[in-house]
Figure: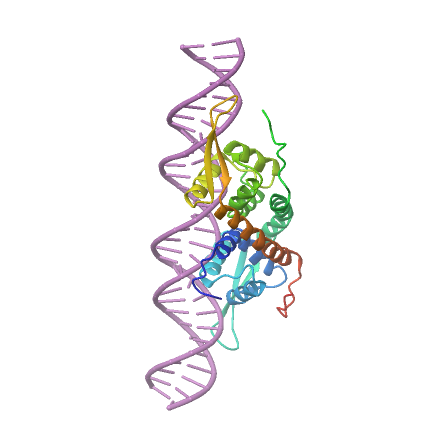
Length: 124
Length: 124
DNA sequence: ACCTGGTTCCATGCGATGCAAGATACCTGG
DNA sequence: CCAGGTATCTTGCATCGCATGGAACCAGGT
């Protein structure tokens, strides 16, 4: 990670994350509870969604505030205890909602980027 | 799209638009200049990216402030004059950047939503 | 015992963005 | 002249990603 990477590409990627990160975090909790740093690493490995602690922890606080996740403390073999985050029913419902909405959104953006825009627009 | 639609689905879609709208608007100007209401209608027809004037006009002001578009006034056969927005070289470069970044981002989200997350944390 | 480093958690403040609501101006038709 | 549609723009609010900083716990070296 290059600090100070304020290129246009980085800026576009940063804006893209908005709103999507929340649901990718929920998706990571789909199969089993996760703790903060674990989520951070999983996002980093994905490449396009790498982010920082300053983003993940406020996000997790919002998810807990909105009752989308519940948390349980658990001891760690090496290090301080970890707070594990698990989906609630509401969280799973939100994830399902997003899973339904996402393809339409993705296809719409794909269409804007790849489809030629004919000049046969509206001629009033 | 009913106004006042504050369902979870609408909320997810609203967050998704963040950052993407800017580049979809740039993409609409790729082949020819467009004016505000025209862009608004094109976005509305796409379904997933429908938005309002209060979103589009501040966005267009930012694009002009950042020298991504230039504007020219043009008379209309019926109605007030229209301000047409056209891509600058910087605007076209930004659009190309986004076109390069988008597939990786899209595929990353697809992977989070569709891939089962094994306890090994091995993502590929 | 001390202290350095690694791990894990969290809070604060800033900048950017989407959006509702409202204001202004032009043209056509009754 | 007034009503309605078209077209532009501004203001204030809420939300979100992120940099920055701090706190707590554990292990190992001196």
